[in-house]
Length: 191
Image (cartoon, rainbow, N blue to C red):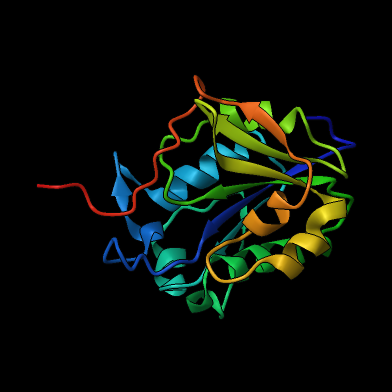
């Protein structure tokens, strides 16, 4: 990343964690909250880092160390991930200085690494559309160039985020198989 072409990080952490039984931002994993892990990972590569909170936002804000991140509140979080993605993209549009692209990361992927984000950031450009793949399967993070933000925001609905927009456009697939674990925590561990 170069200072004249910043890549922002956007951590989506607003969900209520219906299947998990609590907001995933408040889930402790290996000694820290999932939201803290996601912010630290993003901050290792991205500038600025924005985190979108929703469910129990005040509790997350009070409990989590979000140093280095700008916190955005999504009052419409119950409607799904799309509203959080729109909240984050709206926040970036007004960011001082020109951010050319954003790496979108989900809070419930504790195996995400700075190495995977850095590999994705190599493809940063205002017209970029790139998605990480793991053994040929698309996952996160997703890189969205500034020129696509309005279209992504317009097409995002419910819990789909950018999926519909990406399906209608040429997308660069970036192999991150050996760099990160794409497993998300949908339910608490058994036991």
